[in-house]
Image 1 (tube, rainbow, N blue to C red):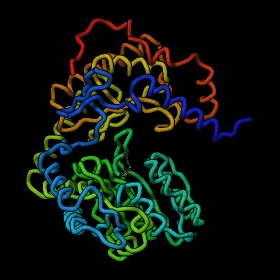
Image 2: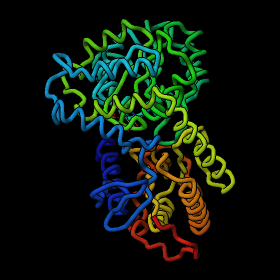
Image 3: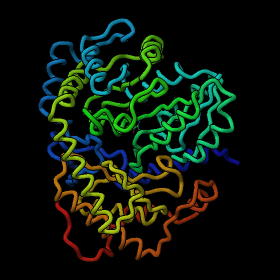
Image 4: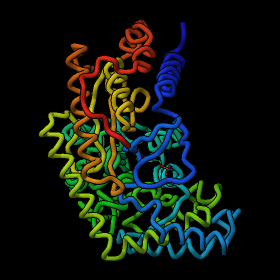
Length: 446
Ligand SMILES: Cc1ncc(COP(=O)(O)O)c(C=O)c1O
């Protein structure tokens, strides 16, 4: 009998292979140059609704110039660990990020490496870790190191504050520290963390620490783009916010923001990847410094206001069109849960045929039974383009789910469900279908 691990791995491999065959995963662009929100795959133009460059800064000439300048002065790479030496741009960027966030900042090479630097440094075996079930995979992966160090780690239901309060009441006294690990804005459903409730719990439980990954809120949300978490609750000495520079910020790098200078210093000195991995490359540092300058200028308020306007527009339109997004929190990430694979594949194919590229999310990205479609918008999109996607999505969603008499499957992850799906006919037929039953409607031209 195959192990659970092998069966889940097989399942993930099959799902990803299906996505590749269906033209939505592991695709490579034909473009020799990018402009606006469109790209080309296999000779077809698509409007891209999968980029996290929320403020559209990724091709801003100021960031490109910053990158070129650093590249010219320092070369394509700087091949020494920051534990020995680092370019002066490191200090410039750290200072700018401290000004943006109001906290002590330590830089890492990526968000994932920031987790690997911070968590094992801060959390020892006298602590308990409670990690949200939907926290990003990069935090879950870092908790393996904690387990290896003898730390108890429990997964807790997503954003369930009643459960969290109950669990803390049961166990908090037994540990020196209890850490709650969560995302600031969840990358798939676009919902926000219940940061105010966590703060209340911190006032009840003096040994409760909150650790947030705000990769998706950082750069566009809050004053100067300090992120969702810091836009809602002030930093305190029992709170750490980790974020990345590769989404709204439009560069590369990870950062950790601490309310406690001593914790920041400890991670700077002994956080594993800060010593054992290479630095952020010069070009990315140059782009990040230029991006930070924009974030610290009044221009950021305008960019943010435009994005928030678009978010409000999308939110209203999803209501008007009856598009059942999982969360209507005020973020540019939207997810429509479909559940079953066949209708998911059919809706995806129809949207691709209409020239829209959006993200399909199945196991292992979301739990089994929760498969669906995510779309993300940025300042690269016009209002008209947003409207076109929403009209098309609502139309196809309704038509496919009506035609297929589909019951939206909201069951929890079970191996039984995996097996039932495995016994179903080959899903590739649906992915490759040309959507011959479409009702006539004007197709979008990307
Ligand atoms: C919430 C979240 N955290 C972490 C990461 C990983 O980021 P990085 O590539 O900077 O390690 C991602 C990636 O997309 C993410 O969405």
